[in-house]
Length: 132
Image (cartoon, rainbow, N blue to C red; front, side, top):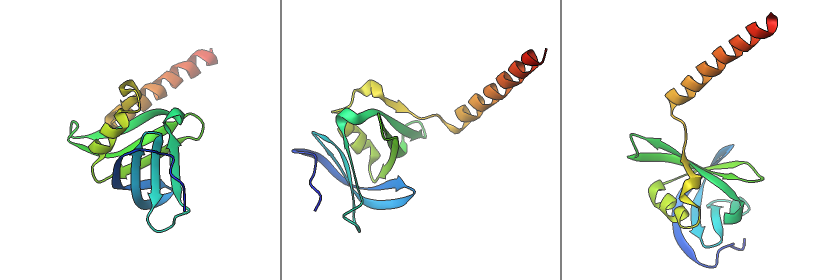
């Protein structure tokens, strides 16, 4: 059995980890870190200490009415994406341990397109200037 990082648990809720394929299990938020345990395979677990979390990226839809998923960006090991039955409850529990300034909203679909168009036209100008 896997030993938990946490000494005190604030929230346990059903969730999904998006690691290649979807893994269903339990999300645990506690005093030492964020943990995910797979329901079917006890060897598949994710433990992230709070010191390792750089920021939390939240996907917001319908002006905050629905939060389909959130991601924990770590300092060394990349980004882990999760979803839960009640993401707002999970994010409120995470906010106790992570600075609220480090919880950010992800870009919307149209913001991504707008940024891509700016970069395309910016690259065209750079190409024309270097061609002279």
